[in-house]
Picture 1 (cartoon, helix red, strand yellow):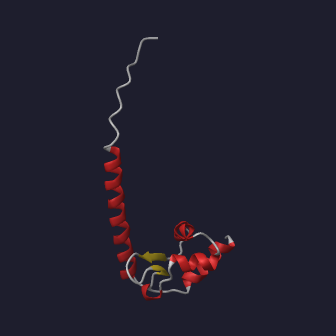
Picture 2 (cartoon, one colour):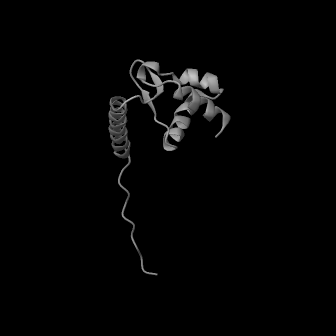
Picture 3 (cartoon, one colour):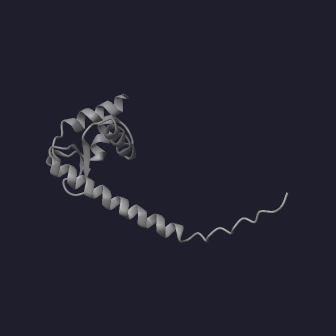
Length: 107
């Protein structure tokens, strides 16, 4: 595990429960990484089995899930985001005209 990743894991592990969330900007300062890297590192840690979740509502930030309710709220947040992404994909795909069928000739 890289040093920044370990710093982030350790700091978030001290934050059990949504009320103790830590903002990405604070994590970035502590680990000396760009703020946009925090989400990438948090996802890596989730994939490794750490119960890290985040909140898009006050209090904002990352924390260790303290109970099932927090996990369910996070899952609802992710599912909503998935729906928003799907709508964006459909909107952008609609901008591209359908491809012309390929005419196969005789060789």
